[in-house]
Every structure is written in structure tokens, then in C-alpha cells.
Length: 164
Image (cartoon, rainbow, N blue to C red; front, top):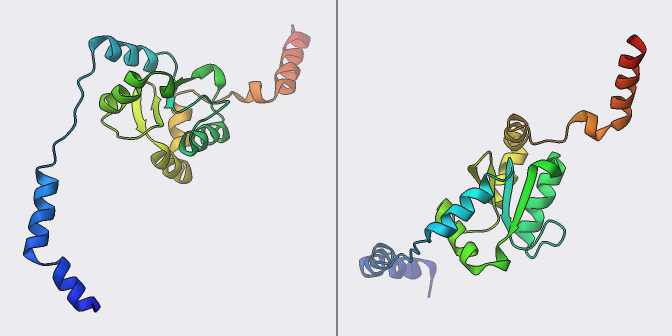
């Protein structure tokens, strides 16, 4: 079968109609999360300026996308004190409910200051453009320069004590 015949077969109205019907009439599986799980998610999102729902833990990610997201946040300099991660593999209800909550089909999912940011692909793009660094800086979620370089802080404290 040559390319033109294949195109005619694929582009025939019958094929397009059947494809359209399957898209238009595909039943949407929508779970309605309980008020308890909704409250638990809202509390989790409010628990820190930067919250990640992931597969596994930051120390032991269980999927490549979660691993890449944790690495990306580390490269950005997210302060561990201002970061919380939730392992969706520990709770099947949470795993499904977080997708419904954010209306985002995949995990990991990142929230900054209680706002959904996106998954690994979105974060990677934002990191490349500099948007992620800006967002995390605005959220005051990065490690301070003093914390990164304790010697500078110690010298500044010594200078202050000498002046007094």
C-alpha cells in the first residue's frame, strides 16, 4: 500500500467520524473525593511554601519523573526547611484524589505557596526559562546566602560585635 492510499484510508470520513465519536463520547472517569481527603490535601499544601506530591520520597524516589523533579528543586536551591514531600504510593486514595484536586493527570505535582505549578515537564521548561527560579525566589523558598555560606554570616556577626 503506497502512502497516498494509506492517507486516503486514514482521512476517509468514516475513519474520522469513528475517531471523533470515540473522543466525543469517551466516558470521563471522575472520582469525587471525600471531604476528608480534600481537607488532608489542603492541609498538606499549606504545610510548607513548596510542596511536592511524588512517587517515593526525596531520598528514595520511585519513578524517574519524581527523581528528576527532586533533582531540579535541589539545583534551584530550595530550602529543605521550606519543603514538604508526600509519597502518593503510600495512599492509593491520595494518589487518585490529588489528580482530581489539581485537575492534572500525572504525578509528580508541585505546589508553591498553595498554588499548583505543574508536573515534571512544566517544571523543566520553567527551569530552562528562569521562571522557576523567579517563582521560588518570590516565595522565599530558597536557601539564604547566609545559610549557604556560614562563614560569611560568622564574619558579619564578628564585625557587628566589634562595633558594639
